[in-house]
Image (tube, rainbow, N blue to C red; front, side, top):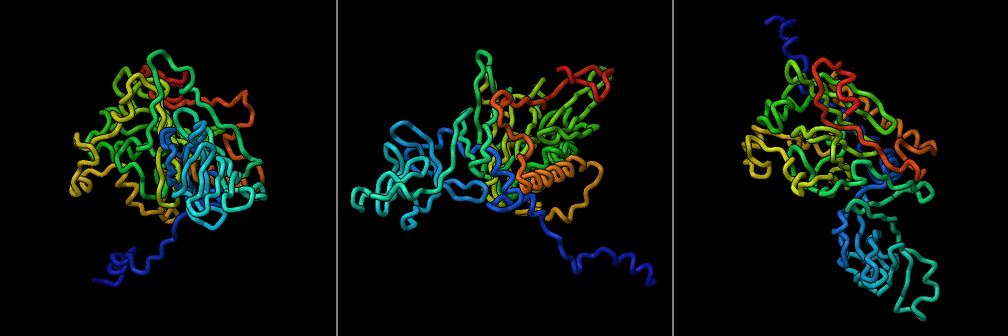
Length: 408
């Protein structure tokens, strides 16, 4: 073999490979990290309303370990840092009382806002107890979820409302789910949140991963390769996917991401019209997250029925061999690593939506660093309701790809 031919065969081996690593400024979520500070300018769902009880519950959000509970007297939900400011014992072992939570070590009692109400070992129950405060975060309850604001107090925005969850029709009710929906995986997902969130702007994986590899997980229409366009919105990035179903019908499917971590993905089973569900991809830390999904439906099992199957089998029942031969979203995203090496990606034309998300994330980082509000922050109660535009729209084939379904 000539030297030229040998060189051709040897080029591109893995010898000496030096990975560039993650885009940490986008992926990491802890206090002081660039996108972690962006996330801290918004309200986040941190649990179902039923999660807050008179028994302290450990949760982890944005890299911070916290204690969630509900007072006995008036049922106020509270979120406090676990380390008691007195001597460091964890409030996880505390007792929830009428007005707050009492540390198991020396009995200091804290209100939901962290005020020290009693120091029972001190004269007069603590003559200077008002001078100390247990770190806490503001909470609100809406739509069956508990929402926390973990950012600078002076920057706290309004908690948004969403038009699809307001003014429910007779027979409709809200469905709340924290176990995720879609292509499988455990309820608590064990990899970086961004690997899932940017997948929302990757419609081209659907006909490959969810059809060619794993069988027809959704519908025959979703297995068709779409024609896709992308656009920035004031709140995020939107994709419009056109699938020509036959000579007379076109499916116009719209998905969007909204900052800082919302996913608007209409039913893959192609329920028509504007979507009736949205989800929040909430990081617990840099390599774990949960998806909180809200939906409105007359069917209380609506979200459970959306979970995809692999050759008719639920994800959790697959054998190791079946997970390998019929991968879904979990396998594809988890296999990127605990935190993907984004800087080693080779983005192509079909990754335009992913690139747009990353650019817009970087823009929000710069906004926060300059003292400005990031995208989608609401301060005026007159405009606190957010309009959702994602959905599935069946239109005549004569309609153009840009106009199809816009009036639905």
